[in-house]
View 1 (cartoon, rainbow, N blue to C red):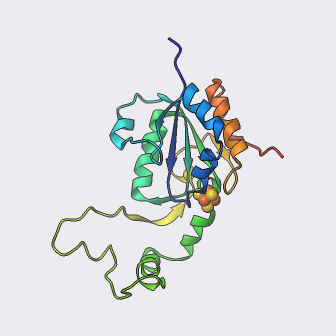
View 2: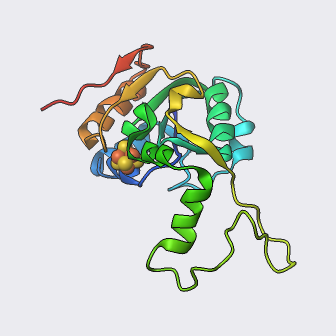
View 3: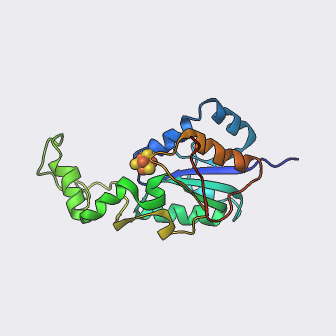
Length: 197
Ligand code: SF4
């Protein structure tokens, strides 16, 4: 039986615009869903870390990863996806170069939490304890993923085969990259997908 190509998508630290560049493929996305097995796509599918772990190494033809590396769980996931994928594509400027998320490197983790949890005007209680210093009122709470000391582009953590520049990339470029995978043309290492005008 003909094996459909396996594709995965993962979102690290980003604004969601790169996910939108996939959704904006519109009807073409229906064709992708028909011609490929989308094995992991947290924004759209109910799949867990364990589901990816259960795949054979190299089983996913291509994984598209957007967003920069900000959290310890991003490192864990992208290393797992690297092992399970023949090709890894850095999808969008944050994954490629750090992008706007990389501006956080102008501050340390404590300053970032102070700003996000106390100083923004929408916070009701600017004296509230920071999440990293207060685990709750004695109740066990889910642990927050740890911030890394610095934001990194994807290729500082795993080997990246190809890049799709853009903030976000145009949906036409995404469609081109995904269509190549569907037709068995995995991106050659070093590929940079050019935007067609
Ligand atoms: Fe958002 Fe741009 Fe980063 Fe994509 S590259 S996640 S659109 S900021």
